[in-house]
Length: 94
Image (tube, rainbow, N blue to C red; front, side, top):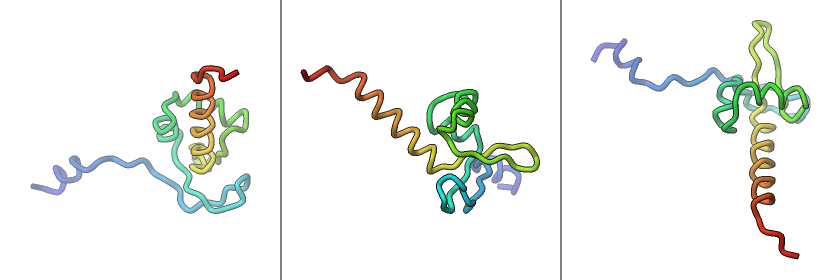
């Protein structure tokens, strides 16, 4: 197998910035691209931008204009969504 064919068979992984200082978390974290954040949280990229605007997600913008999301804040956001969905779907126990 030639190198080009071998390269085409490998999965394309989005660029990540790690470790990167998240000033909101106050620690080194993995930063992921908007598209990957959308895929992980099962929402659109537009929804991710909205969460950045309302400060639900921590983000940085590179000098080239690309946005990267703090994976720690995304994890917290996804967990909050799951808990809220479970609470909404659970019958009232009163």
